[in-house]
Amino acid sequence: MKKIIVLFCMVVIFITPSFAGAEEIDQAKLDLERMSLYKKGEALTFIPWYYFAAIDTYERNVRSVRNDIPKRENGVLSIYIKPEDWSGLVNPVKEDSYLPTIHLFGGIGMDGNNDGKASIQDDEDLLFAFIHRLHFYGPSRQYIRMMLWDYYQRAITVDIIDEYARIYQYFGKLNITGNAFPLPIRSEHSYRSTWGAPRSFGGRRVHEGTDIFANYGTPVRATCYGVIETKGWNRIGGWRIGIRDLNNNYHYYAHLGGFNKEILKGQVVEPGTIIGYVGSTGYGPPGTSGKFPPHLHYGIYKDNGYSEWSFDPFPRLRLWERQDRIARRSS
Image 1 (cartoon, one colour):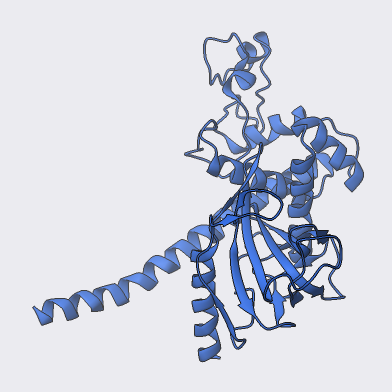
Image 2: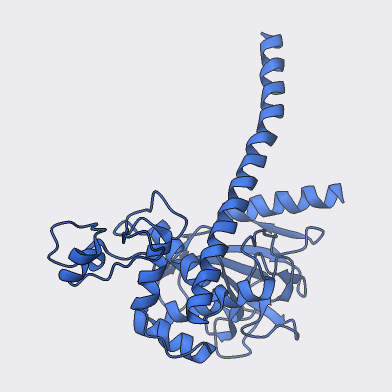
């Protein structure tokens, strides 16, 4: 029995790195294919590639949390066009690829690679049709935001896509991953799962995060690659900062004692960037402090294109803390 267990462990040790390596290769290949399509979009419109990357990322994130939008089984783009829009509302063939009948029924499907077909399953056709559906004003950021508003009719969506574009522009690549625990590992801190616990200030509500207790002035760090979306005072959260990442998570840091003076709204940050310091602000007008022990309130929210909701950050905090401790020991 012991021999079988040892043999099993050896197999796992040798096979696991192979799977990990294969996943990295597949992701690298996928990124190359996507970048090629984004660059094609740039060549056709003079809209920078990172905006196409941002649009595609937004649509992928929305698809991942919505049940009314089908998951795309094939292809590398996640841009969604309804089959009835592609083929025409009264077209009996819902995913028609024959251009004459698509145009006959008022569909928007197009042939993007000159193969004589307009397939909604073909990435180049999908990109070409999407581009022609946009109201193009010009390649400047202001005009692109106007174009995005015309298409999505939602201000938050425009802001999110614009933020994604900033991240891709800043790093110049698609593979942008990694996280960090919000407090330095060497700091004295404690926390437990308190998401969903009842709260009373400001009316009956539930706790939408995890409280990490630490000393005043302990540095608070960005947990992700993202953009500073909000910065300032909130009646409940006190001095707070919000960061949007590329997975459409909004990371909320509240009750700060102060901000890092170098941090600005709209700035791109990465895991470990110091954004502020632990405090006890909130539960009143600007400047209110000391109504509770010093701690960082950390929450995560997800957007699905219609609304935003919170989910429990505790499992991720535990994971990031373990990863940081391992990295510190190995450095």
